[in-house]
Length: 180
Image (cartoon, rainbow, N blue to C red; front, top):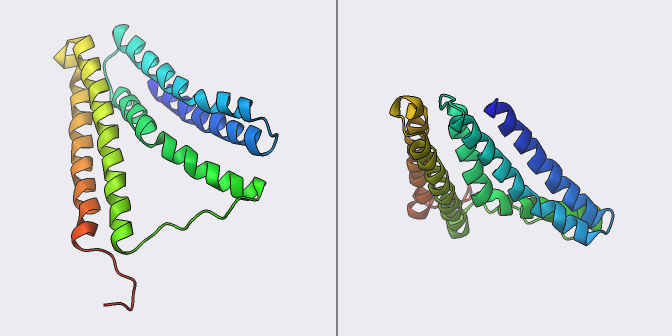
């Protein structure tokens, strides 16, 4: 059930974002746009409440409960960046705004972007781990929460790999082909 709620929340997130931007750029309703965009954090609250209620009701913690914590952490850390990215594209497509800047793929600026993305990932991980620990403490039964610890371990490994890759560009920046 939690997996279905996660999928529903992801769909709802993008529907609210697109509806908000459509109100802003297609309908010229800026206040409505702001209201719709401010509804996106409510979706995270719904997901968190659903996961907590499920666990409080005696459900065995599963990967899906851990995925809910990952989703919330990622949504808080990366949500603004994702909305801003789509906002720039919407402005270009529907309001005559400037073309979005192409992502830098080489040099120091690329390395800085990679470090910045890692720091957002670290922030998402921290938020997710706080939520996961909160669920573990709330349930207070090691046999029912082993999956949540496993999610934290896997995510920590992914974070470590992201760190190595992201900071490798600082030591060995990408160069354009044909340059030395």
